[in-house]
Length: 547
Image 1 (cartoon, rainbow, N blue to C red):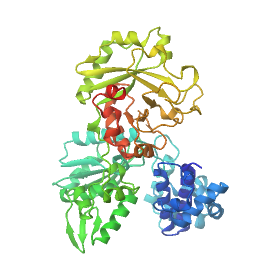
Image 2 (cartoon, rainbow, N blue to C red; image 1 turned 60 degrees about the vertical axis):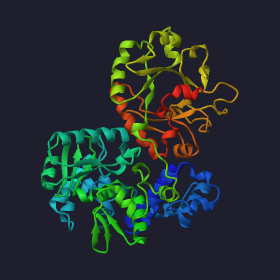
Image 3 (cartoon, rainbow, N blue to C red; image 1 turned 45 degrees about the vertical axis):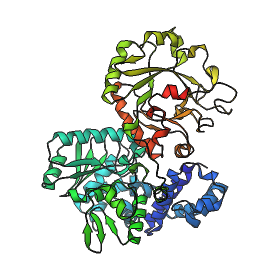
Image 4 (cartoon, rainbow, N blue to C red; image 1 turned 90 degrees about the vertical axis):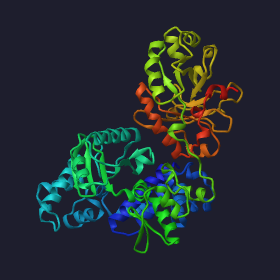
């Protein structure tokens, strides 16, 4: 049973309960789903029912549903809920600005059962006579329907976009904001982008100003990427960008910045737990500050918020209520990897024709980011096609350019005709092994290093599952953020907690894509990877691996 299956079931149960108008239970199912999303291993591996019940937000009732699904492949409770409502109502409920209450009215008062029925009712003018549905609301609904299912990232449909894409949109928007000359003291992003979640639903921006917030909002509305304005207020504005991403900008006073940044970073489960702990100490926390009764204590920094509750500052990437509070209380919060820890990039695929002149732009970018080495990767089939051996490339290319060390790596498959390096490894500083191969799956055999040579790194987790890895002293495993998506080894957090060594890679195709190392460091931190576990956070990765 994959966690994704029971997660999908719990989210659907929550939506159907929302449709019924049930209170509290929908959020309980969503919290359980979020717990399973973050679980570093498959829930099926937890044989003891008590271990399942002990997971945050699960409890006895939901653990029984997990057991039901594990044993029968069904959750009868979901089947009973589905019998009450046409399946098309869930699609309507997820439209921008609709929600469960309005969807229920559509069905009960107009007999609408799906998107097609809603469109027909709109065209027939039936909604014009529905109480509370004024012309503006009808127009917004038409717009939501026109966006649903179109290209891009329509809002309100539960769709999320990959982290790298969201980061590029955020960078473009923030650059335009700063170039506009608006007098803001700070401009930062929050939400799932700051937590480095693998996908992002919308973008939360937070700004501080000592001037008039209205001038900030007015400038924001006219930035080049903004396509549509959905809400315009004095302290909050909501827009949609050209790519379809919704952005919420909030302007707060400098003295409230810490409380607001903590609050809007989330996650929801983390914040609920933090507020509960604060209440036990007599505090009330919201986005404006800390309160005892009606008396407010300002919180200009996040550290001030956590300190009031008796905790050290918790890195945003691990704020998921997945053990971070317990780790903080016991003094074992990991010193997670930071962008400044990375000393180089080791996974740059290069053509066999790579020459000294090709290295110069990479070196300039590396020096600008204070990187000390670059690793260029070659596959045997590419070398053979060019009738060149790696040792010839090693003689042709300098070992150091502009103070940046140039490393060469050979990448082979763990299956097929090139299971391990042969004579062609001569001249390689590192051996990469990818788990997939011609068949796209990993071999059922023991891992590398059993009865044969051991690679330095296991790469390309998207090609197929890794063989057993992650043991202290074993091959490093790759965690990467590419141009479009995030590539994680299975059970990344469990590997980190088990002492594995990681390669954090941006897999750059162009020199400027080395900047994505900042993003991959955040993803590593999200999975509790410590700086001392990162191969490319070391000053000399090759020497240490081969020591």
